[in-house]
Amino acid sequence: MLEVRNLTKKFGGKTALKGVSFEVKEGEIHGLLGHNGAGKSTTLGIVLGMVAAGSGEVRIDGISVQRDPRRALRKVGSIFEAPAFYDYLSGWENLRVLVGLSGRFDRAETREVVERVGLSDRIHSKVGTYSHGMRQRLALAQALLPEPKILLLDEPTDGLDPEGIKWFRDFILQLREERGMTVLFNSHLLSEVEQMCDRVSIIRAGELVYEGAVRELRDDRPGVRLHVSPPEIRDAVIAELGGEAMPGDRWVFPGETRVPDVVARLVKAGAEVTEVTPVRRSLEDVYLEYSRATE
Amino acid sequence: MIPFLRQLQGELKKLFARKRTYIGYGVFLVFEAILLTLWVNVGREQFEELAQRNFIPVELLSSSLTAAYWIMGFSMFLLGSIYFALVAGDIVAKETEDGNLRMVLARPVSRFRILALKYCAVLIYTVTFVIFVGVTGYGMAVLAMGSGGGLFVWNPELYILAVYPDSDEALRRLLTGACFMGMSMCVVTSLGFFFSCLKIKPAAASVMALSVFFIDFVLQNIPFLANHKEMFITFRMANWVYLLQEQVPWERVIESYAILTGLNASLFVVGWMVFQSRDFKT
Image 1 (spheres, rainbow over the protein chains, first blue to last red):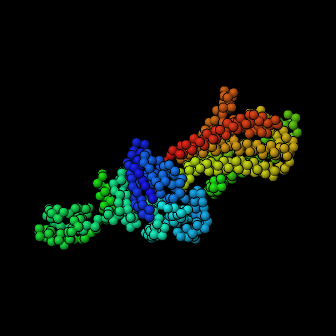
Image 2: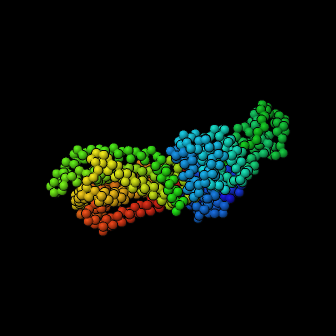
Image 3: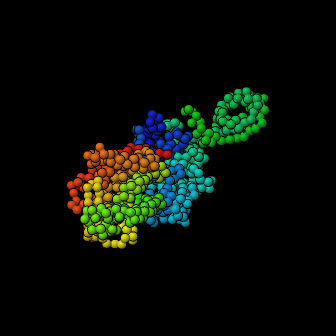
């Protein structure tokens, strides 16, 4: 559905993207991860034709954004962090103006979408009176009109309360289930990405450092938080067992290793074990490792 | 064509839904009232003397049409230019600054079309504003001085002195002049629009447009450049008054408006080229 091929971009003399490529398959929810300034927004900007690529190409449903942006963008709905609507117009008028630019504004279809995002009661109020959550619902409504095949979400849950975040997540997951909607999801909230996305791409300093399934990225190896003294014995035993250190006194071990065996080996070697807590390596741990690996 | 008109309707809706769009209308009504008061109490007396020296019947001068001509001429050039520069300077740059433009650019619509819609909207605003000033100026003058009477036109810069005793012809002439004045003021709008397409703040776009306009006006009035007046935009813009001359010098009018139209088109095209090459991202 979305192919990003070898994108490069420089702003002045500064390189923002160095050959970024990834693919989002139809019906997939794909996370785009990276630190601030990593190149995520530039990538999204190029996908939407707002930023000119230095080289490379983006194809949406087989249509090149660089060659035929109007036709390619017909299939796209997008939401930006802090969506900027015309505050002096009502929600309905905003939809009319924005959706009208796509060449078609259908009142019945718009009413249906507005009802679906739960804005029917306030759609004729001025957007200036909306809360952040309501603006985000309106942003979702405009993105869904008229019937996109792919949604590009740029930090859509930033600033939302936990209830709002859950509502948004459930809504997107439901859209995928009902319509097979493809979603490219750019977020800092790794827990959100972990819960929503099938696959992720991690960008670091303008380079793609990982692309793959979220479940592959999750580390299912047994992990444990240990408080052990003396550290020399601890390190020697852990090294013998093939353990890998993680931040915060945590270690992961090869798949066949059991935590009781680790404790038994430590005690047998003469170490004093004061805390043992089984842990699982989160997406955040893996993400930080990928980020550090390329520093 | 129909989608374009619908989109233009949306653009006009945005323009006219903002409260500050109406500040100009309010200020102009007050300014017109001040000018009218000055005309009735001070200006009329001076022009009666002028008319008597030129053997023109005094009653022609005291008409509401003559007052409307003076109000329009003065208020539009001095104050109108500021409002047109402000509105046109905002039209692209403000949306860029506020982030609205990202929502617009994410739609399947070309940048040329987005700019064409905005440019048409500000041109419509300009022409309707000039007509508003003409109509309200005439309306106020009728309230203060009564209807009827002819039109007396005097412009020493362009060597124009004309008298229309018949009020129907006078009104027709004044309306035609107002339309051409609207076209003249579109140059200020085009300047504001051009600067708005650049990567600058909305206020900077308006200030730049006004700077160009007033610098041109000052240069045009420098005595040693008197023989080169035709080179200046503001001189060409003032050519709407030729429409009020008894024998309209059509060649000169067509030449001036062709130059102004060419300038407007050039400003739009260069603005579009800059806008087309810009990257938009947070």
